[in-house]
Length: 380
Length: 143
Image (cartoon, rainbow over all chains, first blue to last red; front, side, top):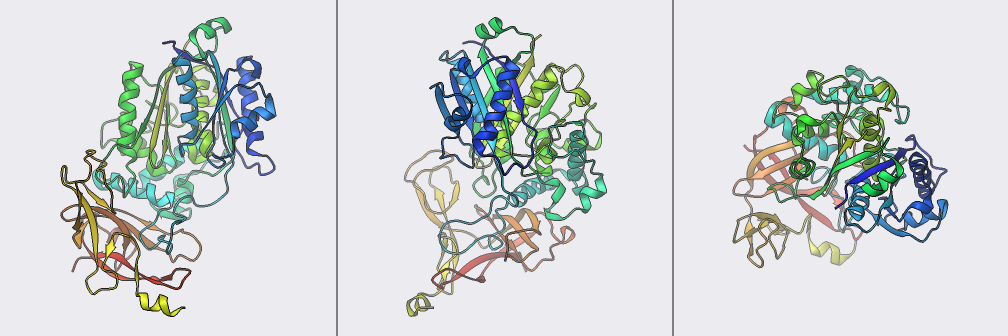
């Protein structure tokens, strides 16, 4: 099986673009990724498109209607917040399988504002605020409080995640926000679901990201100069655990994926130079330091206290600003993460560059649940 | 409200709340005869071990322990806040989610593993489009 390389990757600046259509947003990132690769849509043999909000509306084909209807194979993917990463992985698999040499993956989302989840549905009466809360801030607060019960993690430690990621985003011109948020600002912002305040919730934004993936043969033909090698691509679903059907277990699904990804890549957590992980809420990020093996169980609080996960620390996490400040357009997030890590491996991340980055990891969670992990390596 | 809706009595908030109109409501789980995993609601195949047709109804306990929680301050329009969204492990198996009542919504007052009892009451006055009332379950600190 051929190794797979990323030869073009980019994202639009995340923001709010109500005047644009979903295909228009996706088309923009697709063209940027093609330009980055120095290729044309005519060079693409297939398109793998990730979008959640219009999952039944042929977004991939409509993107081609914007940038070139070449008649290629199009697959539309939906996998909650793992949607973009799933589209990327489908593209990766098509090359691994030897079916194609050169394909495009696009993730795109247009979001409304406000709370996600817990909207009810079904017959009878609304269960929200009657049988607890199904809103995402509450669900991830409960997961964070599970960590607090097991390891004594504090509200302040969870809040520090948000301080860190907002700080990182001041160096990322493509992030939704570039605003420093000191600890007291984070802790004193509106409490949404304890311990998550408003500034500890990811930002609903519109966005798109895209990547061009090629086989080794094609990469050599194009030149390896800025190529990034995909060392591992893994997708898991939630394995049975005792409470998973009542409180989605984002830990087990991530641990399973991490184990497989390290095995596939032939590397360990100690080899990873930067991580973009799924900080949909500040509470979630803490869990994943341990789930991804960046530290031992029970050490996540210390990791954030000691600055190990900040830019310049032992293992910088979410130097893009993360979902908390860069923003979280659901279907785009999984490819935007890959853009971020690739940019560091190429040495092109400017002020937020993780010096000497050779190997990086991306991680997303789709609640319900899916976990996708990619491990990427610098080539030249 | 129609006559028929009134005569129907309160409906269960979830399918696995049994005896809604009686003086002995309870929560029902389905337990796998092979691996003893407990589910809420009926199913034919065990998600833990894959065994088929061995899931039998079982009456869940009305006592348990608080596993985790969040205090919800922002919800959808019309929903009274703050309230405590709680995950409770029931004695003898089964994990359920619900509102923890009769405790101040203050992290200082909420203790992990605090003993909980399951109580049944009207579903906060909520009615469906046909005007039916519902009976729900709630958690409160065990006496």
